[in-house]
Structure formats: structure tokens, C-alpha cells
Image (cartoon, rainbow, N blue to C red; front, side, top):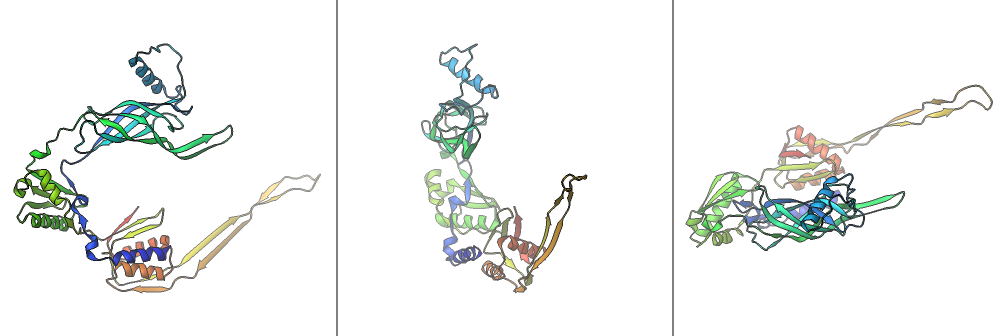
Length: 366
């Protein structure tokens, strides 16, 4: 596995420099061009006996009663306790520039003790934004992400059957008031702030229009003067710059995940001259208690006699390996693979190299 990972990393490092260039639209967020989160509270019907237990979720009965009364059905005082309904939260994102009548995807999640939403239908549910206004209405058949089954003595659950999605399950009823065409300037916010990257974006935009129209304000912001672009409209100006390619600069960084043993290193990671040795020490303690019983028809008590076996086993180390100064990522991976260490041991080695001050990169442990 380590060898395959090393081969993949080396292949990536062998790509030409132009392959690392990224489109501007993938590097920045355009000020004002953003989505809005929506949320609603609704009811799912048509479940095959896997809905909420109404005694444990009284809010389900309340919303069901309200919906039926709005439809002209009076259920006041009735003992109406079906098992095929479930109360849910409905969430969605209203994309930028969404217009009335367009459709968006929604996610449905049970909030009661429903066992599954598989096969259920979401009843018309208003979706509100942070300002309390209704921007969309959701309704449709749920595609659940799992399945569950149970019998008298056993049950099985695969995936998450209490959550699902409805593709194009909500229709936009209100637009976000934002006049993009009236903007005279626009800020470009870098997803990963960096002074060098901001300067490269400024230079790329100015070269595109052959004049100074962009200015790097700080490590995370580039201001674009839309009037100076002479593109005719802000939309035309954005169409001309969003596909410009820039090679982003970034800090040297090593990210490790101790739970999965994953290690990710950038190609600009450097290590000073250092020597590495790796070995394993295993301590094994095993308890094997012995039960001693008296002979038949003899007086006495049954006692448990402890029996403990302790062993210390030291595996042979990999020896002392020297890493020369200025070592790059490919040389680091090749050197660690030559030691024959596992990914988890590799994490410990990188921690030790960082503690020794020889790893010149930001070290992040998750």
C-alpha cells in the first residue's frame, strides 16, 4: 500500500508545471454571488408503519392535525394515531441568481422516533431563510439513503434510512433582491488567503484587460473595478476573468489523520539534514486465571488462582537512515518507504522530525 501511495505521489510530482494552474473561479468567491440556506418543518406521509410513535412525538400529531384542518377535515377530539407519518426538518440551499419557478434539491431528516423514511412523501412545506421570509416550497417523494428491517428477535439497519433527498423537490417562490448589474466594483475573496496568490490574480486580470482594473487589498481580497474593464456590463467582465488560470501559492503543510493513518504532504515540504531510526517494542500481558475446586464430598471452597504471563518483545529496528538537507517530498517518501515503515509509524517519524526542528512545514494533526 505504501509503495502504491509513493508511486502515485511521484507521478503527480512528474506532471508539468502548467498542470498546477487553477481557474480563477475555483480559487475565489465573488462578493455577493452566494447561496442562501433554507429550512422548514414538515410532515412525511405514506410510510409503511415506520413513522413516529405519536405518544413519543406529540408535535407530529399537532402538525398533522393542523394540515388536515386547513384541508377542511375536522379531527378535533378524534383518536387519530397512524404509524405512517413522521415529522421532519427540510433543508436546502437557494443558489445565487435563482429565479421564481426554478427548482432546487432538498434534504429531509426525521426529528422524531421514525425508523425509516423510505417510500414516504413530503407534504407541501414552506422553506424559510434567516430573515423569516418564505423563499421556496418543498414537496415530493423521498429517496432514502438506507434500509432497515426487523423481526421479533432481531433487526438490521444499513445506511441512514431516517434521512433522504428529493431531487428538484422545492420550487422557488421568492427571489433574493440583488442587482448585480448595478455594481461598479467587486471584491474577490480567496478561499485560501495568500499574499503571493492575490498578487498573481491581480496581474492575471490586469493582463487580460491591458490596464489596471484589479488591485490586491490584502492576502484574502482582490478588488476589481468593473467600470474600468469597459466590458459593457459586470456579467460580461466576470465571464472574461473567471476562467483565467493562476498557479496558486501555498504554505508548506503536512496533514496527518491518526485514526485512519492518512498522510498528505505538499510538494514544497522540505526537511533539513537529519538521521532517522525506527523500531518497535511490544509489551504483552496475558491473564489466564485458574479455577481450583475441592474434591468430591470434601469440605472446602472453590477459589480462583491468578495466572499472569508477561512478555516483552523487541522487533529489530530499521537501522539509522540519514536524510540529507533540502530533501523534497519525493525523496522523503522514498526514504521512509526504504525503511519499510507503516503509515502509522510514518506519522510518528514525522512528528519526531518536526520536534527536532528539521521539518520545515506546518504540521497539522487531526
